Image 1 (cartoon, rainbow, N blue to C red):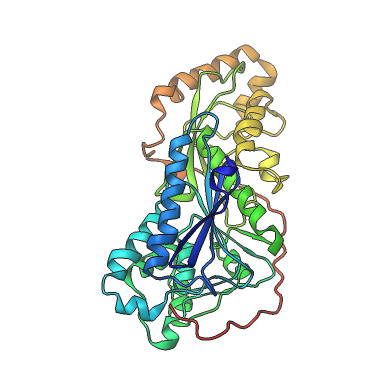
Image 2 (cartoon, rainbow, N blue to C red):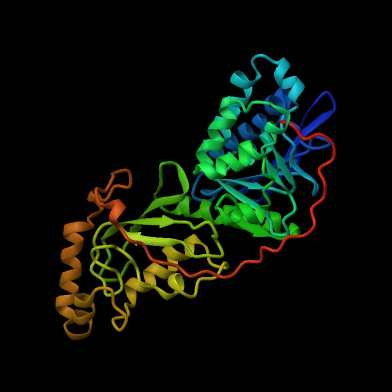
Length: 396
């Protein structure tokens, strides 16, 4: 319940570190509140963020049932200026066990947290503040361009610790991005990171929390209502076990459906493809690609992932469109010979879609050859506004 964490504060010696709240029954939110700019050191992690993460996980596991199956976690900062300005460098360097004993375990903890995590980046994210955001599964940023992302260690001849470097090398997936970020200390804006796929959603400042909640609800609900398996722990590519709708020819069949979230999601539609064969006029038998207008052409950010599996795909299986086929044989039989058409569907279920034979954790040898639906997208507003200067020295 939202009252379970009514702005629970984590502090030490009169210094406040963060606040835990529940903006809705299925969303937790940790707001970093350390003045003036959410600098990170041992006590901030051990007595603040780590304790809040422990409380979130314990609460979620204790009440996880049919009534409260889904949840997600938002991490954000307070105010409009800073998400986090990085490490308290002098304390970090003086603490010989900080990096190996505190920082690296925390990075692993947040990166592998059992709930979908969303960084709602309210302001500047420098050095470890940048890495902190990248430890989350999704990033939401401000479309006006306010709030730099920067690794500025090279500006003052400081090295990047191995744990932080590991996150950067994993998330920045080509040498040009790594060079610009680490060697050139480029100050990225949210729209720039959105273009290269690191920021998932752009929104106005007053929409930051609502858009983050919407994203968390979408992914969290899908993973609670359906059997989902991530592809290499990648929250943007996963497999869903989809059951044929009741009272249709496809009842009793189970299909492994691959879902890929584009960098522009939810403004651009997800890509979907069936990995085991299905006999249907609008699904290509070999590639598994789907011909569905609401995904290919008329997608709206008002839709979410659960709509695909509860509405769009069931409707497609109930009401095929043989006039726009991807499988000519299925289209022809559906119009000319319903009995043979129904028999063929059942044959394919017996051959390729029996529930006991469809396992999400099994690798398909031909998965890499599957073509998934090409998607259209809605335009997004990436206009920039004048940026405030970052006060004082910004270090790790």
